[in-house]
Image 1 (tube, rainbow, N blue to C red):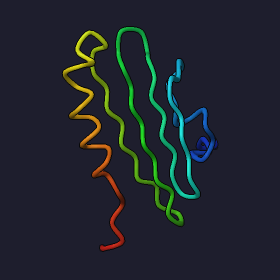
Image 2: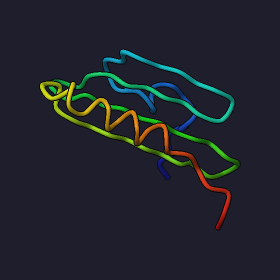
Image 3: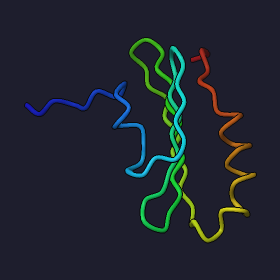
Image 4: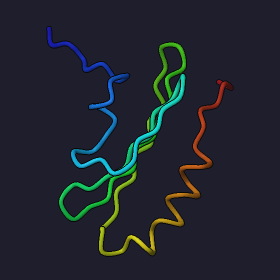
Amino acid sequence: MRRMPDWRTPSVAKPPTSTYEAKGAHWRVASGIEGSTIVYAKVYFLGTDIFWLKLTYPKADQSRYDPMVRRVANSFEPSTQP
């Protein structure tokens, strides 16, 4: 049986060329560049649950997408409601 990766490790939650990283007790954020694409990832760990947001967009359109990504990322939080 193949083991699942440990989602709490930094390497799983960040792009190959990471330009920003932050973490808290139950969350991790990373963004960076994969070729000509910008990748933003935000992960929450609550008990055995994992809440994952990953957004990608062309580096050439960064000024257009950054405000939208910021708004979505800031509003992304796990709900404790079923």
